[in-house]
Image (cartoon, rainbow, N blue to C red; front, top):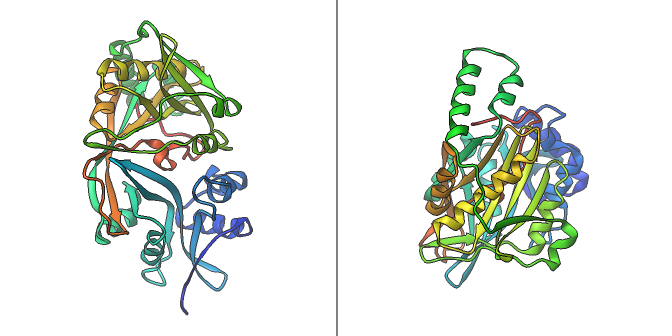
Length: 348
């Protein structure tokens, strides 16, 4: 029986949920398959992508492969490259090749498909399709309250004690004072359209992803995680912004930008983000991800530590050429911005 490629709709929610639970061994209460979250992730309106963002290979009413896209616009020099990041990609063992066929069909809708790490299937299949490696995306973390983390451990053993000692040392070593003249102001969804702040722009040797007002508004409406947007100013002049995702004991910096090449300005940006993360009393660490050297160096100087990396790949689907530059990737380029299983694994 031949599999058919099609988009999904809210009427497919139950079938998609059951498929994802089986493929990824998810519990039914996992936030990833909560109905409101699925509607937001797959079917709510998205700028520049009017159709559904969920796709399946199906045999009659039986789903054999699934994937969803995060639509992105890559800015490089004077080009606008339509890129998609495929999330929730999985396939049954039979029929063989259904996951690959799904990925190829999704690739026909964009100039390029991006992958950052991923499942064993992703790591095996994506390079085999001809994807090009574009560097590494590094995860970083900085402890906020080591003692509170220790007291919240389910199992108090020598490992928990070692983590506490390490976290305490990292906390003491990390800078804490805010630079003079810099401030962060929270911007709510109803203030977004009327608030000006610099957005990412390509630089010599670096490609970035576009941030429109509509796309930022979309993330502020995330139903499963509280997401906060802050405009950053120096001497009351708008200089940049950052986005925080609040997940109980962990706060994530899912996006950050400042209109400068100066290392001190980037340090100011990230210290302001840490300061706002600390305002959440349950947070015991702040985590983030970045691929570009400027951001990575700034994070290290702000007391963050490298906690692992994942390969970054781009698959050229249009054959018009990929960026000849470093690609700036953060959590907002995929589901790392909001993905969790309800417990939130700490990494500091």
